[in-house]
Amino acid sequence: MCGIFGIVYPEEKKNLGRKLYRAAKRLVYRGYDSAGFVGIHEDGSVDLRKDAGKLEEVDNRLKLREITGKRGIVQLRWATFGVPNRNNAQPHIDCKKRLVTAHNGNVVNTPELIVELSSRGHNFKGENDGEVVCHTVEDFLNRSGNLDIAIREAYRVLKGDYAYVAADSKGDGMFAVKKGSSLFIGVGKNFICASSDLPSILQFTRKYVPLFDGEYVYFDHKKYEIRSLETGEKIERQPREYSGDIALAEKGEYPHFMIKEIKEQPLTTKTLISYITESGEALEFAQQLKKSRRIFIIGSGSSFHASLMGSYFLGRIASKFTIPVIAGEFSERFAELFEARDTYILVSQSGETKDTINVLDLLDKKGYENIYSVVNVPGSTIYMRTRNRFPIMSELEVSVAATKTFLNQVVGFAGLSLLVSQDRKGLEKLKRLPEFIKDTMEKTEPIVQQLAKEFSNWNSIYILGYGVNYSAALEGALKIKEVSYIHGEAYYSTEFKHGPLALIDEGQPVIFISSNEHCEKIISAINEVRVRKGKIISISNENPSLRLNSDIFIPIPEDGFFTTPILSVVVLQLLAYYLAVERGFNPDTPRNLSKTITVD
Ligand code: F6R
Figure 1 (cartoon, helix red, strand yellow):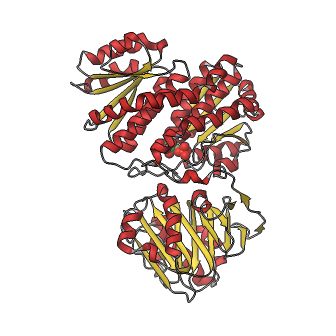
Figure 2 (cartoon, rainbow, N blue to C red):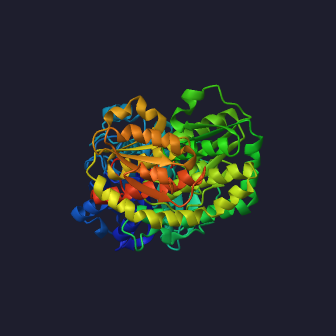
């Protein structure tokens, strides 16, 4: 949800624009409605170039890469306040053309502040909340003449969750502020930068410092100073060294990150499975789950689908009473019904999702202790705020649609369930999962490519599953919607006859996910669709009667309570990818979406 990056060098840089562009390339998955760069020169002059459009388009028009200067700021926008146009694009500059800011997140009292600041003579060009940040800080700067003080005053006025960078063109260095949205500092040999996420920093330096909510930092090219926004008190924090694989931020031989990340799954699942079976940490988590009377698993989007699948695993494999909850409805639905003795698992690949952070706020307020995070990004807000962490170890995921992070979330739940139930045979099977995933991809990819050609002009595709396979259907339907813009809809197979069956017409594709255990129930649902001339596609381990009842049969190499849904998701990820490609869309940056959703 918008990406920001700011950097300070000791002297003028002819290649500043190119450096900013490299940083921006790593941020595009956060926003691609508008792009803007600013270069600030030693003499205080400002070169601001911005417009609506994707980074490449704006660069073609405005030559962003040719910007020079000593300090630079980038902003990539995912529109919330104000339509994508030049005026709403960021960075923004104040009335006196002196202060430059770029923000991400949401300033929720934007309309009120526009009225108030306009009445005091501020000249607003658009409706964007980033512009409100700029004029609010300017307003306080006008009064105190000190940007440090102005930033702390503005903190009391700007409501919502956001982060921003601010530079006084007549001054030196840069400020960066964190309130609810992620922010990191990167410490290089002859520069310091701040960014809304790590990947954009890591290509310049592996030394980074995470900031926490309520903190701001002033930095120049060689030193940084973190302070509390509330009290102004100094906070000492040494840089950490990032040890992960930064080559993962490149597409390599693949045309898109999405397919690269799908293909990485045998490896990423293997890493996680070794952690589950070999580290004492996973066992400790499993022991906590075993003790717990009730377990809540909470997430949004794909992370909710993983929570749902996880609740089936914990329920059926480990006999634990587990309640999956959409993060955004947790407080509405459970109000006073949750207790300190329950266990809470917060699932989020980014660790920045606002809906999920709201649940964490609620649990923290109550002082509960049994809170676990299942997060992919170390240093993210949820990761930093939870003491009990189950890292999903998928490494960097760039494509907006979650694939390898989803898979490791559910593999994590399968592993934990098997540890709780001390199911040795199950754990042995789990160790073979990476091999099954590889096999699934090799065997099903050609069938799926063919299917994508055949279905690319359909307006909708239905995916049906029974029991745990319903959660796989939900995830598959979401992937199809997100990247191919075809309406994918998941249904619980026994529910289909209670309404949606009315939509089945000749040739309508309906995909059935079946475990051998549920085969009869699925065949009965298949018959209901077949007599209405729907096209039947089945995903299942080899099963003669299912094959006989299907127009297209997609065989997965293994059947089982956790293997069938997990392997079926892999097939559906491939289908979503090839549908997007067939229809001419870039699956890595689906329209209207962003990889980190830091607003309510
Ligand atoms: C779908 C997808 C989203 C996210 C959701 C939650 O491909 O990526 O549905 O799952 O926005 O994000 P996280 O997992 O970062 O909390």
